[in-house]
Length: 244
Image (cartoon, helix red, strand yellow):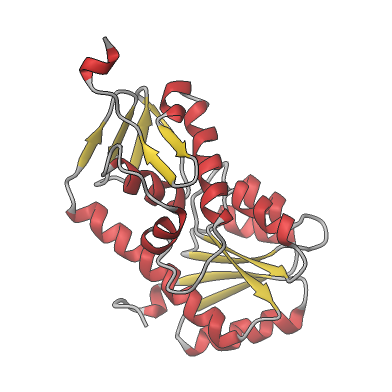
């Protein structure tokens, strides 16, 4: 499904139900992905920190350590893409998942084929982003934020800020068109590449998380991402005249 050897792609499948792990493993291995399993949160975190997976399928409700805690602790060290597996009635928990760094989610009960397609789409976006960072020499510099798309790095007041892949893509998309207002639907389409109707709160929770990370280094940097009520978001850049 990707323009790369799937045999080189490693995926960690985390779920306390063996039946679900086996099902996902079977379907994903048909696409020649390399699959590792974990049956609880503690085992998942240990493996995710020891090895650089290309993607983690992470169940939300698990013994020992739930998916929220795993994602939160993992984000302190790594930016591995995370797709959260959630039950139908766990909407609040899905929002929490986005807040701690999950990039996408899929609701149980799910079609294994849909999971394979969603996994392929996420891996493709990640792969394209990596290709762009190696070939695109863009360097975006604002008063408080510097984005180097060659190294996929973000500096806020000269200090490194670690963002998840989706947070980085969102910031990059906004900063490339300063002062332009983008609606939530447009951001879902352009940043998340959703060709179906996605949850608009996905955008809101990622913006909130992004602001929080920027604010740790600079309140002014965080204020650059402006909510335009009733319309969406924009990256605000003041002209020299307006600063006087």
